[in-house]
Amino acid sequence: MNRSGSVGFVGLVILALVTGVCGPIALADTGSASPSVTEPAPTETRSATMVTQADGSPLVTQETQDFDNTTFEITVHENGSATWTFRYERRFANDDNATAARENFEAFAEEFEANETDLYDGFTNQSRTLTEIGGQATGREMDATNFRRSAQVEEQFTATGATGNESTATGVVEMSFTWTEFGVVEADRIVVGDVFESIPLASNQAIVIEAGGDLTFRSIEPDDGQYAGASLEDAESVRWSGQREFIDGRPRAVFDRPGAASNAAGLLATISSLGLGWYLVGALLCAGIGVAAVVWYRRRGPGSEKVAATASDSTGDSAPPPAAADTNDESDGEPEPLSDEELMTDEDRVVTLIQENGGRMKQVNIVEETGWSKSKVSMLLSDMEDDGTISKLRVGRENIISLEGFEPEATKSPFDE
Image (cartoon, rainbow, N blue to C red; front, side, top):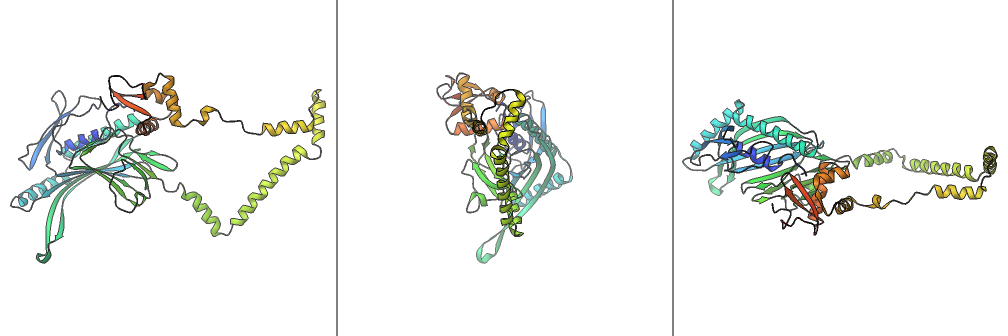
């Protein structure tokens, strides 16, 4: 996909940096100078994090907490939008320092919920930037709305036998927003994943994709995501935990849309409940017989020869015999055979197009030649790459798509840049 900037987890890393979760990381280009981050001092419970641009000017400066775990929760809704929730957890150890650490966090949480701090402002700004880049890359009208924040201490109790229950406390910070047009909405399904690009996941990070409303999972990629239940279709969410890295378009989830099949089923159920099933079948049968009778009468019935003769006299030309005319009419009514192009699959069309262009072409040119959307071409090429039909090579901000034997000599695989 020809992207104007890096989308997906690069954006998540930016937001993680704002909250002081990550160490020094070199970020990909987002259309401006690439930012870097100064790591917070590890000896302080409450530490300063600064995201700076290449020229050294500050982009975001925050007072933040150190966190143990980070979870990126993406709840997909039936209209294709998604609620993104960034959840940061800090565990308080049961030692002499736990009380001071907890009081420090509670003061932080009170300030965070009472005022729109630099931390929260940075989150909202980066979320809007992320959706703007995603909209440019996919061609969909994306936006970031419905921002929320919370911070609190959660208590958990575990049984310790005869001594009773032991309490453990965790400080939790959550920030969320709604990403409109996040998924590709089709007639019978919703597909998410086309905004992701080269996602690295740290050992203390996880991505969770949830099925909102009446959506149900149809498939996921990679297929090693963890979920509860006997089958993927019964799962409410799927979780991928670090440390790992995803390729473009992954993680990918396909949901079945409610109502796509139930509308027809509901109509049949209504007909059945009213006892109209056999009446409907009889009516359709009678209608079909009536149409067939009209066609036969016009072609074979009384007066058909007279009509043909009258037409011949009026034009002064000799008309063909009625039997011959019937034969021609019947043959004219047969559907013409489909062309080779109409019988080709989308994959065949892409392969043929690349062959016609010397075995190699830019992904953006495939979009232009086929007239398909960027998201459709991106997902199709990802599937073809998984099947080994084509290979992808990133050159600058463009993808070069090659058939086997036509790859650029300077690379061994489409991921060597």
